[in-house]
Each structure stands twice: as structure tokens, then as C-alpha cells.
Length: 114
Length: 113
Image (cartoon, rainbow over all chains, first blue to last red; front, side):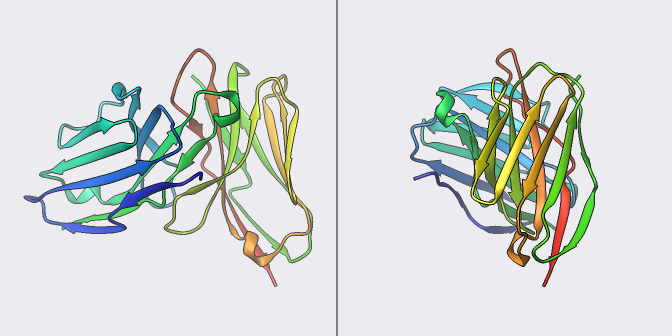
């Protein structure tokens, strides 16, 4: 099973709302990622968790707060977002063995901030 | 700093044609190179991954090659079908334990019936 699942598929929120995006994988991968993708652009890395510890934070605004409760789950907590944060948010995971080096992406959450 | 370039930005071909998508990178110190497909509004689907020690990988009608010395990778699609229409992204993972994939901007492929 090479599947990364993300919920919700779509999210519309106001600038004062608090919401969370969820990501799950059951491939035993130890690295999980959050990306942000704007239209017609490649994905931009936001955060990397390696063995459930935050290993990369690409200077993302504090209104985005990642959380990794366990090795299978990754959350992205959203608070006081701006309209320019509207984008497709992608989660990915990666194994450590050469045979599982591929980054597997979820289907994404389409976020609209009003 | 690694930079990845994909040319052309868009490509339109008739069904059945064989085609090549190009990807170039500036720093040959890569751990692997990955090709993805993305349909509009969807996530990325991994197509092929080439380790730095490999020259090519094949999956069905797809063949990806890697030439580190020239900083180039190609994705060959045989007998293209309308269902192949999508944006194709290549991404290089630098050596040295980096977790950050460096993406090209993609090639938007349209296969016309």
C-alpha cells in the first residue's frame, strides 16, 4: 500500500478561524513533509518531520503550526491565515531504504481563505 | 545552489507519438532524481526514481535516464495516449542528507486524440 491520505479534500475558512489539516500514511515511513503549492507553480517545502521530530522548517509564518503525534500521522494547524495562503497543501512521506526512497504524495487539501 | 530547469514548459502532441521531456540540473551532487505526474488540482504521482548510481529506470511505456556528468535527465514516453495529458515535474534530491527536493517548474503535456 503506497498511499498517503489527506483530510479534508477542500477547506474554506475565514481569517479568524482555526482549522487543522490531517495526513496519514501506513507505509512505515519515517519522514513526512508538508508542501504548499500555488497554481502553475511547483510545490514549496514547508516542514519536514524525521522520526517524529521537526527537522526542517523553511521559515514558514507562525500561523502555520505542524504537529507529528506519531510516525503515521502529520497535522498542520492553521490560525489567522491570510487570503494569500490559499493554495493546495500537499503531504508526502518517504522511507529510508533505497527501495523506498520515493517521496509519496497525498491528494492534497485545497484551502481557500476568505 | 541546485537549480532544476524543465524545457519545454508546454508540449502538445498527437496521440501515438513518442516524446521526450527534458530536465536539467546545475549541481551533479544529487542523491536521486524523481519524475512525477500531476493532474490539475491533484497531488503528485511518482512515476520513476533514479538513484545517482543508476543510468535509467523503466516502467511500462515510460523510461527515464540520468546523466549526472551533463546534468540532464530525460523522460521518454512511448506511444502517447490522451490519458498521459498532465504536468510532469522532475525533482532532484541533493546529496548530504538533505530532505529538500528541488523541483523544476514542470512541462504541461497535452496529447490530442
